[in-house]
Length: 152
Image 1 (cartoon, rainbow, N blue to C red):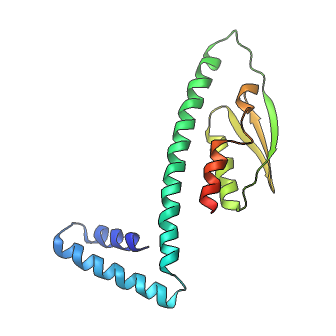
Image 2 (cartoon, helix red, strand yellow):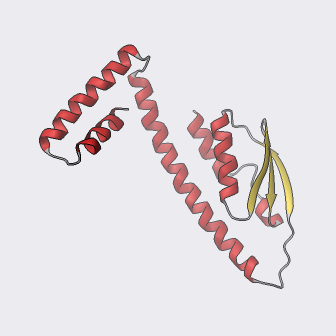
């Protein structure tokens, strides 16, 4: 929150000078102290937010990498007329606990070309894959491993 307060201060001021930056550091510290005292916020929660934002950035990089890999795998299949695709529907269970990370996993699978999340009930995902080769590794995917780190 401290960094968000400081960034908001700088953005609302419209420019960066040493005076604005020093005053922003003080104002952000006062706001954080207010939150800690009156809004049940703590420095431990602040550090947890920073830790999770690093894992979230790593997850975003993983997602972009997987989207590019899937695009490179799907493009030749779409452009080749002779090769037949064998679509399949796969069901698997996840060990993710929070609804937020389950939703992120479902959306990440859908964003990856060749796969669409058809359903999610409790821990069970139903995924439509354009080809059986795309269904391999859905159960223990890198997405799920990275999201488990976000949950901790």
